[in-house]
Length: 438
Image (tube, rainbow, N blue to C red; front, side, top):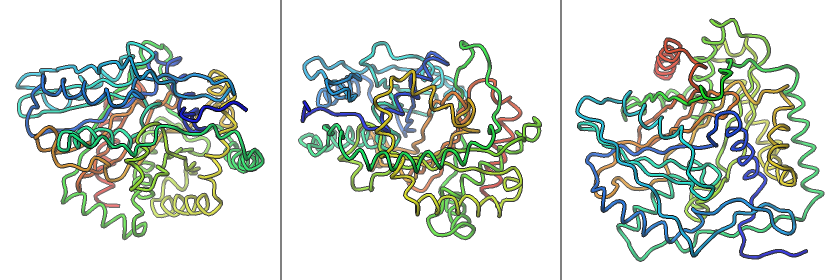
């Protein structure tokens, strides 16, 4: 069979991310887009930053590619090395009185915009507001996952410090994986059984607004200082076990969101929460920056478990152990290769079938310590780094955790109308309170 050795064939996980992008565009007009934000102690020179970004992007024409199908029907990322598109840098001057809500509103406006062309996947922003300064990168999740985006900005910063190092060991090509079919089908049976166990009923969800033009994403940041974060980590290790921050933060999130479901009298069925997990060893992130390298835990939580923090935490830990022990994460990656033959429109519909039209009660991720390994950006100290991903639609609600140099951040991402303002404030307050006491 004809194969091109130097092409970057998309994995099954990549193709699922493309299907989520397709579904998001159909539902909201905007694809599966995210944003990484650096808070800086100072404002980088905008002309200098623009020139450096242009030079940097020229080394990585993969950032201006687009999906295509090869002669063997496998999807791949088509690259145009001779026609690299210069990245946009938008400047936002918000004035002396702007605070975090205004900053989030402006960055939220940008993430609700579509890219201009099929080959544009990155837009950069400089935001200045009194004594607060931010650099943000809006990125297409088909090109970069969360840790990849962190590492990509790290590559940019390293080039400013070591101009001769362009990370030549980055892996751009990927084989088509048109082999080992028995292994893939066996993994598919395992994954299918796992999904059938979830499909006993439709999970509780918060209603989405019906009008497409109203489905704009909004965000709220909850940030903890180093001392507060150290206390949270100590409590997590005591309650959940060493390095068990993901189960602990998921339990806190479930506990906080259940209050909203109960007040809305939405408590029929079990909650279903997909949790993305980065499958790269930390030392491999710099070699596998582009595209998606995740798999998924799928947690099923009963309303009774969600009402009792100890039982909730034990249920999450047990399910995590069981899924790791059974090899479900690896099976999910293998089985997803079988999905690449499907057109995105078909795959997007297929993903809704197991849960009777829904995908999840809400989405969750814990990125962990950042892959951006520097304390400065363009000679300005980095005070914090956090993510602003658009929540998939459905469910239109996601909670996302990350750490930067001993600081924990939580971002609530929601489609406008899914949460009312008083509910948003309550969820944020409950998450802060539970992380400090549970």
